[in-house]
Amino acid sequence: MKRCVTLLAALCTLVLGARPAYAWDDFGHRVVARIAWENMTPQARARAITILRAAPPETGLFRSTGSATSQQQQIEMFVFAATWPDVVRNMDDSVALRSERYHHPYRHYVDTYWRQETDFGAVVPVNRRPEGDLLRDTARIAHWLTTGSPELKAVGLAWILHLVGDIHQPLHASGRISPRDPWGDAGGNDFKLDIANPNAEPDKQFRRTLHGLWDGIISDSLRAPRAPAPLAAVTSAATMIMQHHPRSEFSSEIGQRSFAEWARASVAIAQRDVYRAPLVRDQAAPPAYRTAAYVAAEPRVALAGYRLAEMLNRLLGS
Image 1 (cartoon, rainbow, N blue to C red):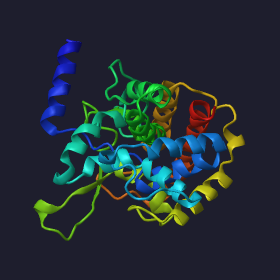
Image 2 (tube, rainbow, N blue to C red):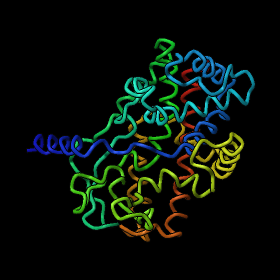
Image 3 (cartoon, rainbow, N blue to C red):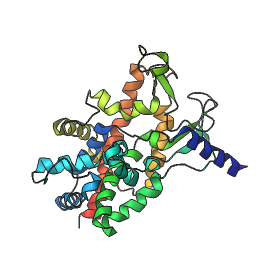
C-alpha cells in the first residue's frame, strides 16, 4: 500500500509539473554568499576565485566580470555564482542545452513530511519518505570541490554556494500535509495567499504563495531589489545582518556538518514560525506575520553564510 501511495504521488508530480524550487530570491542568495566571503580565509577566497575562473564558457558562470582582477570584481563573481543554479533554469532557447545540462529542479529541496489536521494545529509526525535531492546531492557535490575536474569544481562550487542557502530556507525542507493538501503543499507553493494582480482578467489572475513570501522576505523587508542588486546593497544588507547576528551567536551550530541536521532545524522552524497565526489562507499575509517572518528568516541567512564559510575554509583553505 505504501508503495502504491508513493507511485501515485510521483504520478501527480509528473502530471502537475515540478514544483517551483526557488529559495531566497536573488538578493537573499547573494547576501548569504557575501556573509560567507567576509568569514572566509584569504586562501579559501583565492581558491574559490581560481575555481570559478576555470569554468567552461558554456556554463555562463564567468560571463559578467571579465578577468575578475579587482577585489570588487572577485566578490561580484562569487556572489553571482550563488544565484547561478536559479539563473540556469531560465536560459532562453539559444542556450537551451545549458539549461538541460546544468539545471536540476529536484536538487533545490528535500520535503520532509509532517501533518496538521487544522491550520496551525498540533504537529503530527508522518511516516513518509522525504522527496527531493537536496541532501543526497549536497553531500556528493561537496566532494567535487577537491576531487573533480575543473568543470565539476566550478559547477560544484556554484551549487554549494546556492544549496547551503536553500537548506536554510525553512520551506525547502518542509512538506506540510493537511486535509486540504493530502499529498503535501510543495513547500508552501500550494498554500495560496492573496491575488497578486486583482485588476487582471480572471483567467490571468494568480495568487501569491507562502513559499514566495518566504523567498522574498529579506529583500521585501529591506526594500531591496529582487532582480540582481548592486554589490553595495548586498554588502550593506550582509553587514547589517552580521551585526544583528554575529558569528558568536551560533558557536554551537556552525561546527555541525550534517546536512540532514541542518534540514531538520529548517523543518522545526517551518512548524513553529511559518505556519502560524495571524496568517490566513487565501488572504494577504498581514504586517504582523511578515514582521515575524523576517525576524525568523534573518538569523537563518546569517547562519547559512557562516556555515558556508566554514565549509569552504575546510575544503578550499589548505
